[in-house]
Image (cartoon, rainbow, N blue to C red; front, side):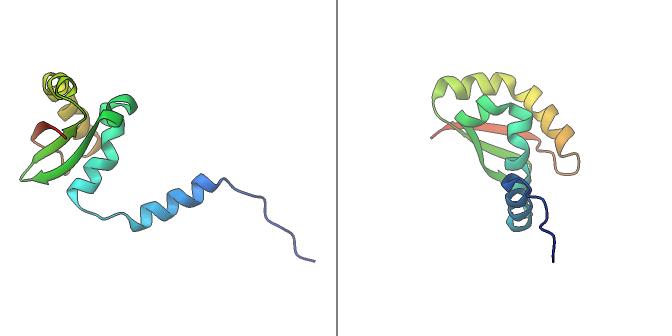
Length: 97
């Protein structure tokens, strides 16, 4: 008689799967770190969509959010540098979708 293993959360299995299929580009790393650096609420309204030579383009839902994030850019860059010390962006550029 074989014993059944205890069930484990589906989120654990999906997390392992998504980690294995995510690209290993600087933009992908920044997109993964963005909700941690910016916070969950901001991450719903603004998404990193491009990266070139240390400049990250973040698309925002509206101009008010883009303006607020521009003022928060130094803090966001600091948090991203903490999360991604080897590939931290130098500049954030905000634009409206």
